[in-house]
Image (cartoon, rainbow, N blue to C red; front, side, top):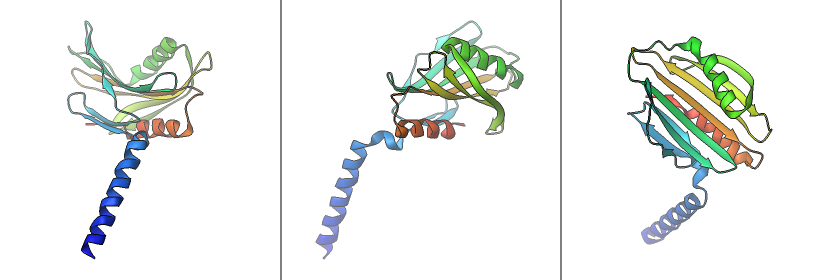
Length: 175
């Protein structure tokens, strides 16, 4: 009897492993970075880009994507010197973001993430080939940190991929 239960458990475990190998993106990829100060459940394993060292700040992008289908990305900008960046600057940041993508912002509203002021927005590329949502969070400090969190998908994205992008945005938290 014990051998029968053990055999059943082993078959169940094998089926679960096979299922996870077939559908890994359905569960997302939990990303935690104490150095960058955030966690998020990306829809696929993310890639951490090389730090871009500017005169005032260092920017790092963490991205998961399927080319031509979707992108899930967090950009972290950390100031090297004392700077004044506040929640009032978020609307301007959204306009710059939209201009870089040749997109139109369709909705923008204030909110909070982990006690910090945030701005939530939706956008659509002018060519109609991509739609997305984003969040900008400013962590005020002597040397502030700005988080730009966004998802974008094309008409090629499946409902499951779009749902995974929604989970990614909802899962974003500051450490």
